[in-house]
Length: 42
Image 1 (cartoon, rainbow, N blue to C red):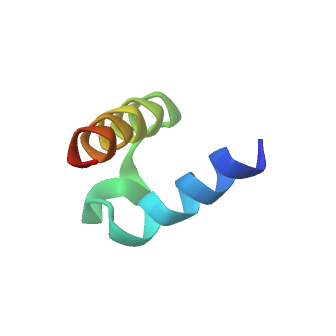
Image 2 (cartoon, rainbow, N blue to C red):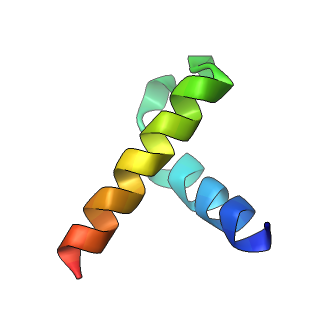
């Protein structure tokens, strides 16, 4: 669970400026996309 919160905090730092207005479901979906991009970059 800690790594999820760490990823969430990381995403919060460089995510889209509208993130504060996003719903939880949108945030989870956006985080999943970010993780997919991160895996592709490796």
